[in-house]
Image (spheres, rainbow, N blue to C red):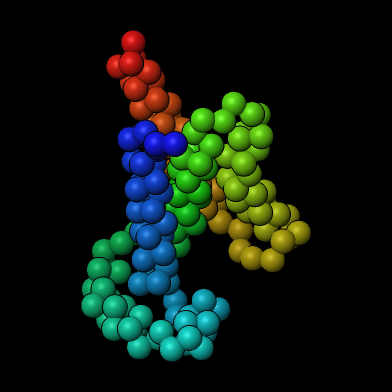
Length: 153
């Protein structure tokens, strides 16, 4: 089965958001995070440290929310785009379950942190950024799909 151009764009965009979220996390988040211990165990800290040194001045110009809230939101958007691309021909209602699964879990985990049911630090900006990114993706994807349908007519 040949994948339409729209699905290929979704996969490219998803990959871009996945890489962007990862880059922000690796380049600008504190090196005390558990992820960096794993990187050290894998022998990756030298190249990561070198990259971080090249980007150290940029961090001063990035807003706090971008460094601390956007990576997870970018990963949620990447997930949504991948799911849209994977389930593009499906008519089953199960596709909605998979589509909304991660954004819902992200939202619930933040609320769980607020209620002290889940370990972590509640951040209302995380909720806002995840919600805005998800809504933005839904709107733009719907508009793009409507435009594709209109061009097919």
